[in-house]
Image (tube, rainbow, N blue to C red; front, side, top):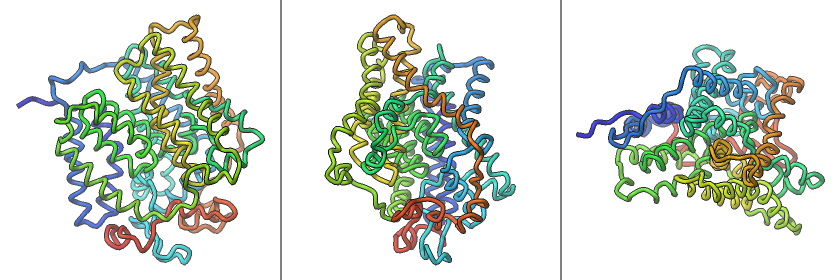
Length: 486
């Protein structure tokens, strides 16, 4: 029998993404369903982390100095993002802290039967990011949640940065820096949309694709899962040609962020069809992934209807939406992707994974045409794994031995990257100067009267828009009646 080794990165990264899923199916789902699914998922994780020795590439070993720099940079970036409340946090922590509070103080699953405003409803949201810190804080005390959430996020970002270093062991630190400072041409979009703010909000183009600092600052659960998901789909599905294991990794993303899983699905399909058909049916990871996906499908099917969804022309109200869409994709996608592709045309730096870059670019062109969520959440959060491949494209160019600043292609890539990096480089510095606002649950509850997540609309949202619908499931759903523990 062929001897197998564990892929250390896959085992750690897949374990990180899967741990909240294991907690969810074991503690939220009825035991008759949850325990078999948890057992199948554990078996699948172990199976997916094994690779045949004959197909194993030589392991990259970094010096202690290199590892210290990579870990230190990841930890610093986590601190600057506001995670752990070391520096001022974004207003999104009203939601984050309310979720942590409910998960710590209430039994799992979170049922809101006793609240008159949400009778018969339950928490139906991408809760994976919150489960591990909340579970530990439930033992240690709620005062520990900031420290635990910081450690949890930092571990995830360290894994992301380690993967980036593995991709380019000759220039690991520079690759990590390029990735963390990556932004689409968002600063140009910020200038272009001035004076038309309300209309851009209406058609879902208010925000550019989030840069890699803003991802952590506003929504660390979406950013970390998107990047680790992209890493695992790339490593398992593209490098190792094990699509069943890549599919398993993709299913673990659903509980972290359904939107992130939607965004990475086309990338997963590319890796599947690039692999020989005989590799599609590795039954252990495939079965574990299918069972987990089935549970998540029933759970999220119960989500309350979102009012703000549809093609952007349905929100245009007679205004010319097409010119704004074209301007958006030119600044946000075509200019940065075009610079990378021009450099690649001259120097072939994308050899080996060009189809993934092209797929990511194509999906980013289409995403803005559909709005889902008040802030166009599908585009904002679903794009996280896709922009990761654009960032890798810039890293491939800027870290290439063939990069020359005096060449036209080198100057174009450097110029676009440098201008775009102004935003993710400057925002953390400006944020340090911001006055600290208390977004703790206690402060929010005291000022608004909000008792739990089912009443989040008292603290967030706007006229005619109840934001709580983004977080609650229906009491008449199959999930409420037959899937969740009650």
